[in-house]
Image 1 (tube, helix red, strand yellow):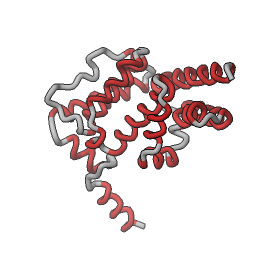
Image 2 (cartoon, helix red, strand yellow):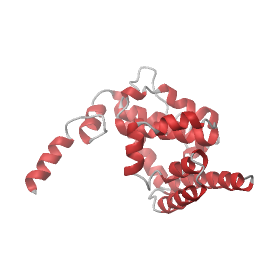
Image 3 (cartoon, one colour):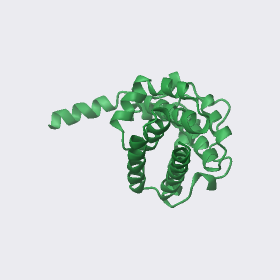
Image 4 (tube, helix red, strand yellow):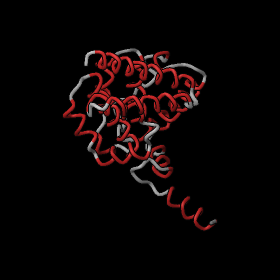
Length: 212
């Protein structure tokens, strides 16, 4: 068992595209901007834990220099943070455009998946395009992630089942799973933001059910 643990630790230090420890260390050492981005990310987590939401953050919180490498894990994380801030402010038109600053093919696996999930939800709820939503849903990494992290992704799955697959029962089932998951979210600010998104989705489901 000790030998297995040592081997696992060594493998985890070898950088790969799935945002393992080795890749994060490599990302951190690549530039001053990356070190600054890590500091911002850690500071933001403390603020979310204390109950602040992204809409409470200053406009320049997630500012990135023009010369920054957007494929870097920590710098790309700031782009996702800015998108979350805009969404929390109710600016759904601008928030989705933030992801256009990123090259999905160059992103670490976990961040690529996070961005694709946002696109999937957007093209179901905010700018309905079910053909495009199905294409995103068929992505190999997305299909695998949705299966492995079903509870974490319950809100997205609920929207897909209800509106794209027209399965109201499964949609409601996953909506309830989403409510259970957010109740266990450790950061008060993050919990509040996710609760708002769940309520928004539930309202759209209720409206759709009434019109059928």
